[in-house]
Length: 225
Image 1 (cartoon, rainbow, N blue to C red):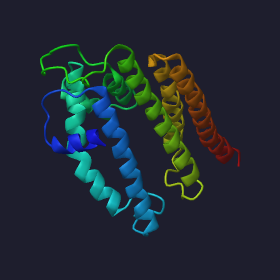
Image 2 (image 1 turned 90 degrees about the vertical axis):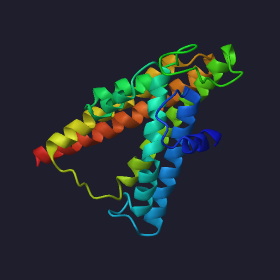
Image 3 (image 1 turned 120 degrees about the horizontal axis):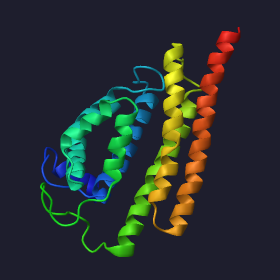
Image 4 (image 1 turned 30 degrees about the horizontal axis):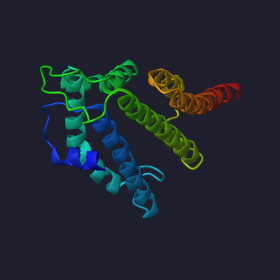
């Protein structure tokens, strides 16, 4: 939780650097709180569309927008990249993947043009590798949890995206993102951690293949009838 509160303390600080542990610890906790806000919206019947977002989630997301952008900017600074590269998120498909690589990359040793290295004190060598492995495992586990959540919610929601082109695009992006955990597994240093990530990655890939297959089946079935 300390990294979450640290991000709030640096609410509008877009200068300096932030190491991977700082960024991803905040991101995972922030996603958890966002998920809880979504659940509250639906439990209280406040969701704008059943099963989706409501005012509680909206207010929370709006409140966390600036500190999230500030922290992401400092994370990019840590790998000696400009914060303007956050605009890659708006580049369809490829942009978010490139940005993810930067956000997962190891920070520059020592000082760079954005300041001193803010790597966690006392974490070096094997301990640093272990810390990185734990972050990657957490990311993959969270991706699986989100995938499971939306797979369940799809059974209760009306399909608001009936256009065939959108369904095809959704199937394609689902397959691409399903491969991300498998790619992350190659960044894991410890043998045990690597096996855990690969097992989770295979599970996530199966979910992705199922979802993409379901979408494509709906398209083919619609044309058949």
